[in-house]
Length: 113
Length: 113
Image 1 (cartoon, rainbow over the protein chains, first blue to last red):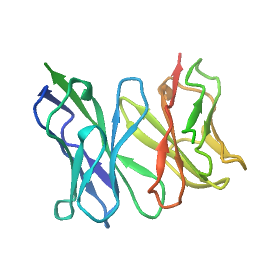
Image 2 (cartoon, rainbow over the protein chains, first blue to last red):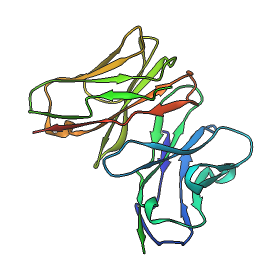
Image 3 (tube, helix red, strand yellow):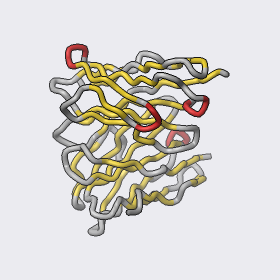
Image 4 (tube, chains in turn yellow, red):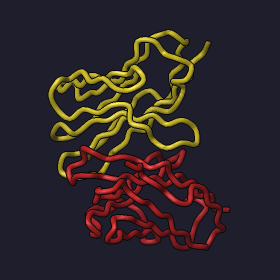
């Protein structure tokens, strides 16, 4: 069965520190890959996506993600975290045969001053 | 170009009642998918409509239904509401049928008392 795993339920980082959020997927083929961010009470905002090509993708707000086929991973990174980055982050995949998103369980990010 | 619109944004209903939520996709988009987000179950796929036809359905009881109109607007209906139906309901508007270009609306927050 398809699955998306975000092993870290909650992460706390200091403002200015680097960040890496992990995401692994389990599918037969390489799906389309996404990272979304959700602030409390809000909808989902797309940070970045990967379809094919260069395995390092740049997104909004200074985020980037790297696709590693051998590890079935799509980890999200940011060199220097800002207090406003505190939110819930979701990794998601879509098979290229349809529109259904499969979401991970999310990682809650706390940023301390 | 206007984004995805969901109405109403907030809703309070009583157990046993029914509710209808609406999603207006981005102009030109033909696919609308619905998701339920709860703290316990995370983001779960409800169903997808493409050109007025239900193309895919998640694992939800028959109390959850939907439809799509010729202008691509979609409604989802929940009958005989239960406390556990309290959730954020998100819809995603899709341009193509292969999952690459989809955009989420702000969601409808449903509270069942």
